[in-house]
Image 1 (cartoon, one colour):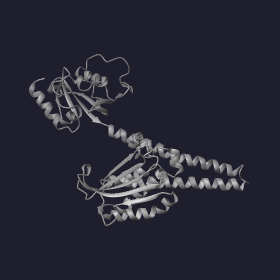
Image 2 (cartoon, helix red, strand yellow):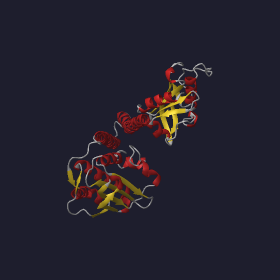
Image 3 (spheres, helix red, strand yellow):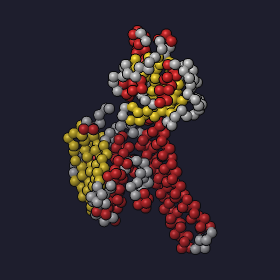
Image 4 (cartoon, helix red, strand yellow):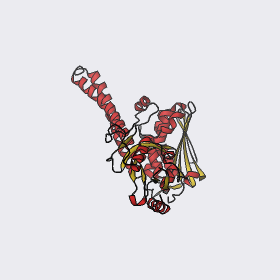
Length: 377
């Protein structure tokens, strides 16, 4: 291809927002836009295309675009699958559209790829356009997982209640003791479903407003004192001594009071349920002169216990929806598996940080860091 043709192709690609490359008749790269360089790295020009993107179905589509008269590989060409992870939807004489997993940017990318010949006026060659669908596919997988988890969480108590109802209508019809026991269990299961639905609605509201920054200020020290006063009876019943530090005075930070109360009540409640065996719970409030991720000063609230602790392999997943370290124990304690997910999204809305440190047998410390002031992002 002549130099002026290459310049025209390069100018065309520069105006395209998605990664796009162009090759000449020898399948060597003659143009690549900035989006392509961000995906595949620099120095893409004058390289064989196969050294940039090695997927066999993409290479086959490129060969057909460069030489439409070449023999077509045997087998059905418009079937649903061209390979184990690629799919093409196009007539043989038009642009080829494929879905494929490709290696790029140090990761596997679920991509939609279009390979089309260059207009004859520009010479022999082809363009390759790539749309990253990874985020959309991950979101769809999250949706499927979420629906499956909710279905499971609701099906379990419903199945139990259905069995009890059938028993009460049959063998236990005239057994007052069994009837009372079954009704108590059904009441407990119904309450758990109500908590699950309430937490699902809460999570939905929090996620919907996550991009909206709090417009008010709260007294963080007073809010923590009120939370500890509310949770005091539960701590006393569990035989846990609460020790606080730094909660005196007035400390004002940007925040939604109701949501922050929910955060700290949830964390204190978790510490009592799962770390109460240590008999101690500590709540500490301290200022941080500069938190790198917040790009400024902040206030750290530490909630620590001396319980059994958590194996490190679980820590990265604790804030996932429905993830439980011990599912049976969590359900027995009345947990829905959504508490820490709600906490995470509330902290995100406040532009803060959530850190969880724990070791098996050494207790757990959960730290919420809130910015002293909210900066515009």
